Image 1 (cartoon, rainbow, N blue to C red):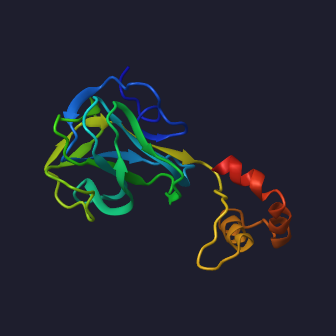
Image 2 (spheres, one colour):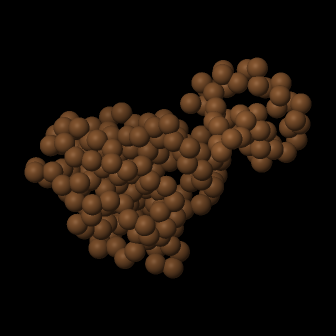
Length: 215
């Protein structure tokens, strides 16, 4: 099996679970970013992950989302990051979930991973693909902001994915003293202006059910 955008890399509706079967590159001490276009209906990223192709020593990794530099065709500002996640010592997919990263459908983004040093070289996974793009930075200890100049680039797909939601995201959340109802109301009005305040309050009694659906 090779890397297929929308299945085991890029924007996916479900998280991949099997070995993508691509070629190896050294991931530890380096940052790699893959260029992907968000589907037209994408609104929220709820999970991000990368494929570790071999079992090595424990180390921490960063996963992040970058905006696209249209002038230099590379990552630009870091929009989101999940830092210092434990890789463990096994091969396989490594991921972070329960995210609330907003995206705009049709926009170009870069999905990035950085891994700290391991005694044994830790491999990531990629597949040479015409029209696709990976950029890399060497000797990195974190996903920096902004990305800056890349040390390398290739026409490839990289085994980094996100799971996205194609609908209004509703989740229990209190922000800076806001009531949950106010939060739902604002989110619903932004996505569905025709929804009334009364409709929002009616939804509140079923809120826990809605929360589980979108968790």
